[in-house]
Length: 426
Image (cartoon, rainbow, N blue to C red; front, side, top):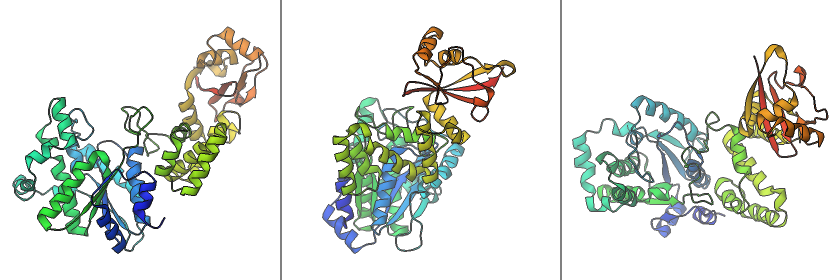
């Protein structure tokens, strides 16, 4: 596809937009400078943010210039969009640390090669820190009719839920001012964000028109949701993070490979750079051979490679196969093996003076067998494995040489039920 708007539409990434014909003309005359914002309200970005990052990269690949804005200022306030209650304000020091962390994450997905489409990353604290309350009210606030601000969905929802502070009520003005500042400083004429940000996006478009008498554009991507309607990456306590210290590469890969057949076509469009022909072929394979899970495997490989690199992806694929008897457990790096065992379930077992427990004891300790008697029956039936080797003796005891990296054992029941044991000195 030669037209970026056609590609975004085909991928299901156009939820809302200002005048599409005018935006198409601006793209044709390009390059267009555009921006997307990322607030440091957590220690890192998640796969919900990845939708915006990849959309920005697609537009950049079409020849336009992206600006990644990290909210050093707005992160101190908190966006009320999608929140049913007032945010807890984080300490300034915490937000400052998160700004630098998120800046580095944004930079991984954009191309900074010098030229007309070379990316920038900025913080809105640069132009907000010295803005006085009087200047903010006189020069920016006067352009925002309160009745229009009250009509924003994010504000209406909070008022219905019990109220909103002036702090969060003012967030939309701060975001609009960001667009104005980027227009003045860099000629930025387009903001891209999630559809839950639509009111904030058009607020910036309107401010530029009121203050500068110029036209600007806004484009919103849809919120990508799971079958149960919750947002990917936003479920409380269940976010899938881009940083390996928050979500391990192994867990990240497993998230994608476990998507349902119904989810995968849409996820391939949004989270990979595969063509329409390639995705169509994967849809055909899913219909005709669903058990092969070809689409899920390619989705998991593509996104894990994109986020963690090809070498890390190869390691987690090897671990994923080895955990279920299709590879060499001893060939796995210690960190990768530890991450995989954490994901499937890892228990710690004490071994006094190096005397290891029996396999029966370990099967019961991990929960793979509900009891020691059940563990013995499992071994007798040929369904118990230690480090991918079938256990045949009911009184079998692992040898110290069986310990992977000197501390781990992998137990498996049949083909799919796996657990790990970490042996520690008693």
